[in-house]
Length: 204
Image (tube, rainbow, N blue to C red):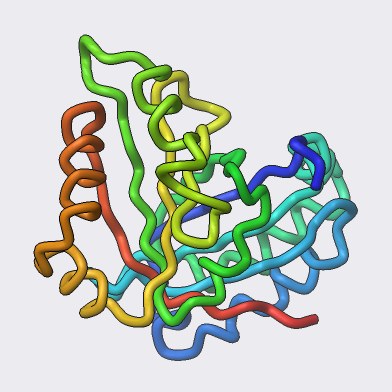
């Protein structure tokens, strides 16, 4: 898989229409699915607040998404189609995940954990990267993946699929020594913002 692959993560306050019927976003997703370079598309609401919409798009490369943004004909159509789902301002960024560039196993899990990690003052990107991209720690990527946010110098995203929200809480509180060491190290290097999302894959 090409190292150029990036995952777009867009979030926004969901409209009442989207909360009532997520398929209101389908016309926008149809446009995205037909766009050059788009692969898998997922969307859903954050578990914690039931109000933040997540849209996940796997792109062959960042330039493909930029080409869509620059398309004076298609991009306005996309925004118009997306508008019914918007209850506030949209924000987005792109992530290059490792070791799985396309972490499908985590997106297709019953619930996906997204952890935005900001490197603490006095720490370096290498402090985090040398740990989380060590195969002895994260294995082949089916357990957890971590990626650098393209637009941010000192931010990363950790992604992990779970059987349920409760399963994650049980793992954190279950006394597993390896889990405890992993979490303790992360907290020593980064500040974190955690969200859980039940994603649905869009099928054109």
